[in-house]
Length: 178
Image (cartoon, rainbow, N blue to C red; front, top):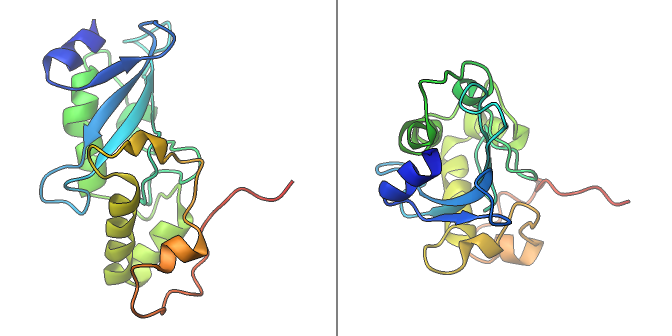
């Protein structure tokens, strides 16, 4: 069972509803990346046809990345969404696919258009925003799972660490009013 392989590879795994089909995995940001030191809660759902059909993988903890939808946590990753093979397993997802996604974002195929645009337009500002999100949402040992993708930074929280307010014109995605 892939979930057991993950646990034997020292990943913290938490089942949902005591089943083996849905669970959370604690994922550490890859070394030498903007995300190093961050810890994210990832939701994994295994379809009935797994491993012949790819798992559903999404960030529960909020992350700022061009290829991760800021609101839903959905991941845009070809190897999971389109080119999945039964030869892959969940250890591949957490030790190779997700680290590669964080190390090498692809702003030309975004799920978070604002992050992609900022990355292409102003790389230092993008990197600063990534670090702010890591600090705010993905701090290890501080209940990072409580800061989920359903929440957003308020104007006050977002601007609290900035000395200069050059980014005032950048909108933060949120849910539309009903």
